[in-house]
Length: 137
Image (cartoon, rainbow, N blue to C red; front, top):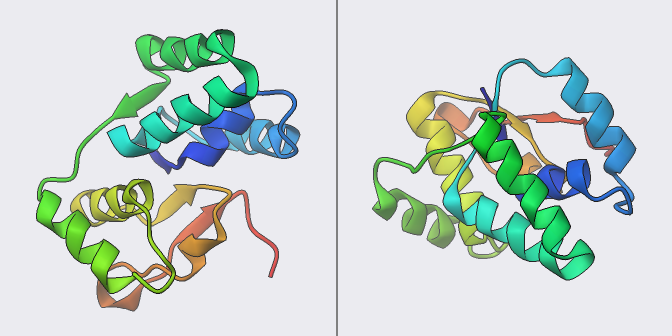
C-alpha cells in the first residue's frame, strides 16, 4: 500500500488539475491499493466538490468501494495532535498529521503527495519521506 495525500486523489480524478497527467503516470508505477486517512479523504472530497462537483466526488467513492483506496486511522490520535504541535510553524494540517502518524504506525516511508511539506516532515530516527511523484527542489 502507498500512503496517499489528498492532492493526488484530486488530481487523479479531476482532469482539469494541473498535476492530473503526472499523477496518472505515477499511479501506473505504484503497486497495491492507495492508503489514506479520513482527514485526507475528507479534504479530497471537499476539493473535488468545489472544483468538479458530485460526479468527481462519486468517482472517489468508487475508488474506495472497488478497493483501489483504503482508509485507515492512526492508532493514537494524541500522536496526531503532537505532530501538529511539533510542526506548527510549517504549519501542519490535520490531514498531513494523520498521514505522518499512520506512516509511523505502519512503518511506511513512501508517500504519494503533491505537498512539498512532506520534504520537511520526519519519521522516527529523522528519516525523510520518499515522495511520489518526485518534487522539484
